Length: 119
Image (cartoon, rainbow, N blue to C red):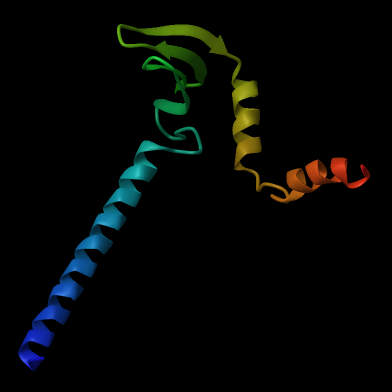
């Protein structure tokens, strides 16, 4: 293989790696801006949680100033369904932000149900 061809191939690979790295950085920043796990602290309006339902419908918990609302959305409308007490949402956000326990514990509890059973 020609040395000049190998050099051009290596240069092309480096350019592709740089472009992919830049795309990854931009996507990570956009992802953090769009989903704020802290509930959008420091912003007046923030999306806290979304649940997608069948039929192009969804439920959203939205924080406006210090109040939380459940908002329903379908193909035709966006409707405020209820207001949620701030302390219940904030306790949920705090629990979600805390580090999880042992990830294997549920599997071990499930397996322990069958450990004593013999045929």
